[in-house]
Length: 188
Image (cartoon, rainbow, N blue to C red; front, side, top):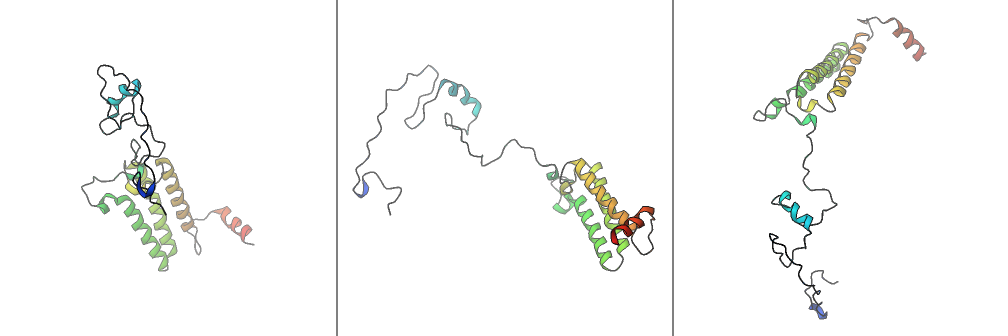
């Protein structure tokens, strides 16, 4: 197998001749001198070169690949912090942690044999998440989608779970007249 980086003339191959170059183009006053390896610049490139900045290669063709570092994009809405960066991470994410803690408490309560109270705790936690999303300017990781979509999603789920907890058998706290006939119609 032949090595890719063999020197010219190595392994019995003749050295390739250097390509012939034509005469150097005339320089206009104020145009920098071109070094041998540097590509030739057109007049439009010479004018744009100062605008490109220090790190840009002047005269290089623009790549069609995605840049390795993304610039000029907007941060996702949920990436903001509820508290400044000098505070520890749990304190910065207090809205999300409080909703998770209330939901976990509701699940534990349900698991210990009190499903109505546990479901009420979960529903109220989701309604509180909708309120936090509405009234706080930044809620950390509690922001998943747009503010409106988060409020509607958290609110509807919270109200639905709360209503289900209130109509739960035995001895429902909330009596909805059409619910009993709907359940009988779907179960029979």
